[in-house]
Image (tube, rainbow, N blue to C red):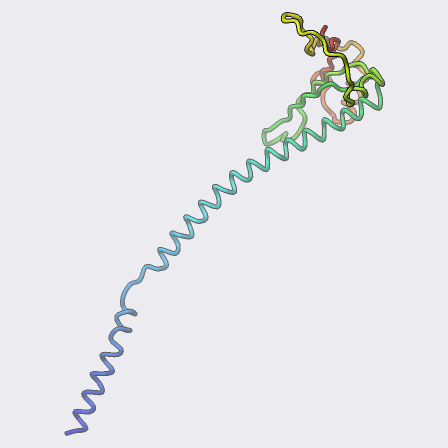
Length: 178
């Protein structure tokens, strides 16, 4: 009889010990669903960051691209003409098919004054002038279509394959106080 009692007590102890594990196994945990939702939320957040980063990078690439083209055009003009570049405006195509192609170019030139232009880089001591209200000594811009621009237009056309109608060259004829 003692054996039967020991056996029943042993079975009860085994059942008591195994029951919590059986309940865990039979219970339907939705841990995978929570992990999936957290992963999806994280991916959406990263996608938003990547979209912002991509637009920022795209803007920087456009800016660098246009800057390089401006530098190249300025170098071409300095090599081939007696004018220096006062400003360049470049617009590019931003649609899918022609993305990155140059749409049009505006070039503003001014006459090369040689040493006078280089002197702008140095600070010179001058006598202080009396200030008069009403007289203007600020830089003004007067642009006129440059008649002899055919050579410059041809150079840019050959190097960048932009239609000649989309290349405009102006000459800045006014300077300071005029």
